[in-house]
Length: 177
Image (cartoon, rainbow, N blue to C red; front, side, top):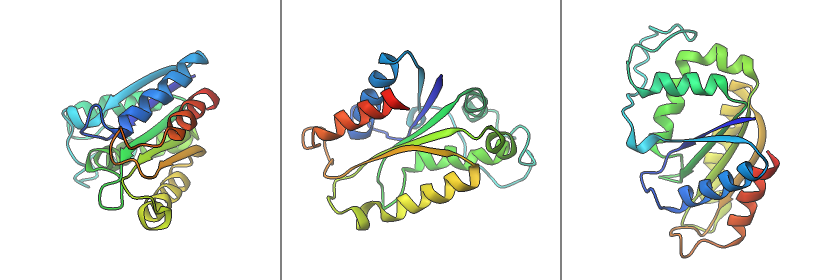
């Protein structure tokens, strides 16, 4: 099983990347192949909505986004990981999701499994994660992703304050996906 993790945090040692590492440990312990793509530290441009790709071709941008799209087409599972920024995913992750446009038809035809790993300072689910959870509901439905699980780590503003239960839950998600 091939898994691609789209890591959207600019903080290499922050909370969401810490949980990504737990997910990877769990997945690798079960013999799964995992690639983490650090979206915050690569050359990628936003979708311009120019329709050059026709939703089924190559994007006009000649950057890492095209390589990532091809990796998604080769995987079995996609994982979205990000801190919550202003009640949504980070701009780094959102930019890559927008680039799905170039391969929408091919990606939707794969019926990929998908999972979410999100972290936030706040402890309130509805206020902090309600909007982002609905965003993923809509994205998963539109892209024909099969929901393989979601970790919404509340009270996780820093690694030191993150409740330990999220380490275990994320590790198990990696093992069981």
